Structure formats: C-alpha cells, structure tokens
Length: 140
Image (cartoon, rainbow, N blue to C red; front, side, top):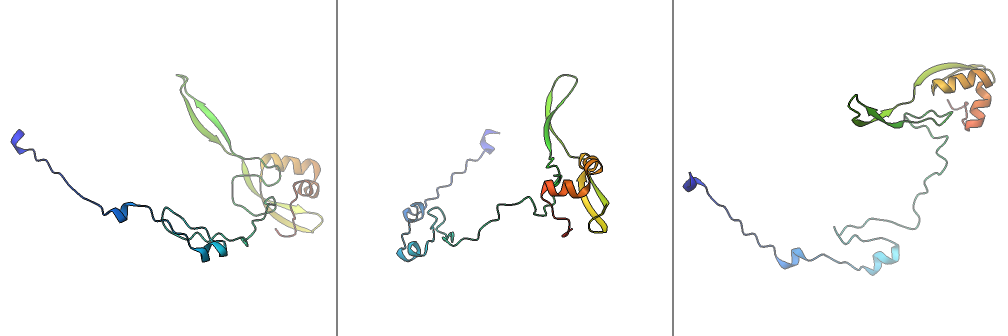
C-alpha cells in the first residue's frame, strides 16, 4: 500500500515582474481627478463633478419591508428554545396593501402600510398622517 502512494511536487516560478505591484503615476490622470488603483491597475474614474445622491430618501419609492408612514422596520430578536438555545430571527412588520379613500383628492389611494399605521390613519385621518410623514399622495 505504501508503494502505491505517489507524491507530486509542482514547481511553478512566477517571473519577478509579475510578482511586483504595478505602480502607475500618470500626470494626465491626476490632473483630471482620476484615481488609479494600485492593486489592479484600473482607473476608478472618480471625478470632482460626481453625481450628487439625493439626501432626502423619505419620499423615495423603495420596495422594502418598512412602513413609509410610521418608519416601522424589521426587528432582530432571539428565538429561544426550551433548552435556552438562542438563535437570531427577524420580526417583520405586518405590511398590508390597502385602498383608502382620500377625501381631499376625491379618489382611492392604494398604499402599502403597516396595521399600526392603518389604526393611526383611522384615528387622525389620512391627510394628517401623510403630512406628518412627508408623503405626497398626489403621486401615488
């Protein structure tokens, strides 16, 4: 059995030029504001006139498990077994699609909101809750 075992040895020698990191200093690229990656040798294209990202994301339409009216979102909790073994779990918001009558617009508005927000809308009214949350119902 011992005579059947084979030992393979690979000797791969990489040229010294391939092992050394490539450092590029291009004066033209530096004057344009481009950043040069030293790891991959790629131009990242970061300029001073970058596109601005809007900071107000409250009115943005995002399909996530967050209630847009009350900002309720997923909670991280522990699932505890009988042996007191704790496992992480997520407690999602109870989101529902509802068509609500909007009195000011004289039409129905289809919204995805939490059941807590639905109770708040029944208590205070759709206009008041939407105004407090900063949501424009004309777009929806």
